[in-house]
Length: 212
Image (cartoon, rainbow, N blue to C red; front, side, top):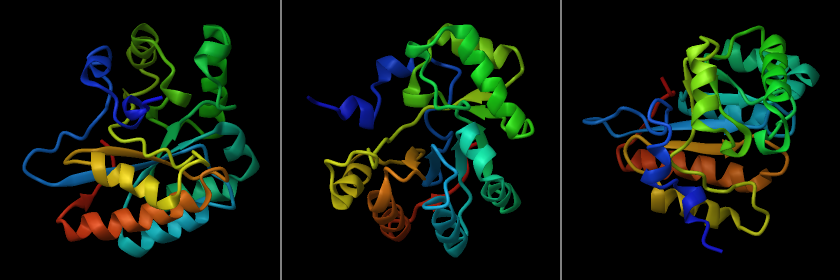
């Protein structure tokens, strides 16, 4: 099955969410934003933070609330080092598998454990409707719903680390918001692709900036 639409969502899908963030508003500058989903976990997130600190990069971490509950010291380190934190629900809950009231409750639980520090929301697997996305922003709960411009599929165990980087190398462009995963599942694929992207796209003249 062709999964290119997952790696880089088509324009027709983006038009359904015109007020959501898919790419950076970057014109003259060559910029890319890193975002990380599903952490924090001790097996991956501290390594990611070390690499970002090494290169002086700020990123956004869309945290699962239950992981924040289990590893509050890692979450506090994310905040202390100046990264953006986002809400990714408390249990990585998918909207297609739950009712809206349960979904909203799960979002609120994540907000509570994050001490209401998340101003951005990313739905697990991107599963949200335009109407529900508007509800979350119009209520003032979040500034933006954030999707992605490149999803290199570092979570896919059928891919090699090089193939994950190849997805970034093929699809990333000026303004791309890249989703990676600071999860156990992403493993060495994320680690390899992250540092290789920093080095190779840095050589091409790209800067790495946080979403805004």
